[in-house]
Length: 305
Ligand SMILES: Cc1cc2nc3c(=O)[nH]c(=O)nc-3n(C[C@H](O)[C@H](O)[C@H](O)COP(=O)(O)O)c2cc1C
Image (tube, rainbow, N blue to C red; front, side, top):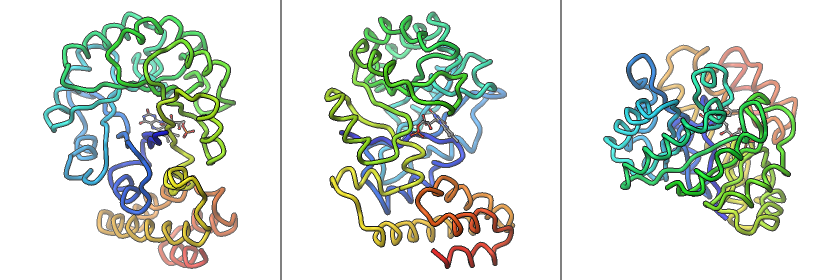
C-alpha cells in the first residue's frame, strides 16, 4: 500500500517536504500545494516551491488548479518546462476564492469543463496525469455525472476525499459514498481523509484490497513518522519518534532563521510546524510552544519536550 503525502498549502512547502523525506521517509509521493494562474502568471513563490533543485531526494508531483483548458495549458507548459513528467489536477479545494472561479471542487458541478480538461490531458501523452477530488461541491452525488469520463480518461490514479466542498473540513468523511466511488470508478483509487493511525491504514487496506494507496495530510503533520511506521508494520518507540521530531525541528528552525530576519516571522513559520501536533505532545507544552510570542519563550518551551 503506497502512502502519499497530501498537499497542504502553508505547511508542506519544499523545505518541509525535504526535511520530512530526510528524517522520516516512508512516503512514496509528495504533492506540491496547488499552483494557479493568477494576474497573468504563476507566483514566483509557487515556481520556487517546485524547482527540481529544491526537491532533490523525493518524488514530487506538482499540483495544478484550473477552470478551463487555457489555464490548464499555461500551467502545464510551465511545469513541463521544469522537466516534470507528472502532474496532479486539484478538483477538491473547497476555498470559496477558488470554487467561485470554478476551480477545485468548484469544477465538479460542471461536467463539460471536467471533460474538456481530461481530453486536453490526452494531448500530452508524455505526462502522467492524476487528479484529486471530493464527492461534489454542493451535493455528494455530483461525482456520478463524472464517473464515465473518469473511467475512460488517461488518469493514472484518482485520489478521493469523501466530503463535499461546502463541508470544508468539517463533519465526517462519507465512507458509504467512498465505497460507491471505489466500486464505480475503475482507475487506481487512492483514499484520502482523516487518516491518523496505523489501525486505520490496515483497516482501509483490508476493506478495499484493490486500493492503490492512502494519502495522508494532517495525520502526517501530527505524526511525521507515521508513513515509515506503516511501512515497517510497527510503531516506533516514543523516544525514537521524539528524537526524529527534534532533528526535524532543528533543521526547520535553522531554515526559518536563515530565511526570516524578524522574530515574529520566524515564529509564524515555526508555529506551522507544530500546529497539528497537539495530539502527539503534552498539551501544556504544546500550548506554551504555540503561545510563545518571542524567541526566548519559544526556545524555553521547546526545551520542555
Ligand atoms: C491548510 C490546508 C491546506 C490544504 N492545501 C491543499 C492543496 O494545496 N491542494 C490540495 O489538493 N488539497 C489541499 N488540502 C487538502 C488536503 O490535501 C487533504 O485533502 C485534506 O486535509 C484531507 O486529508 P487529511 O485528513 O489526511 O488531512 C489542504 C488542507 C488543509 C487543511
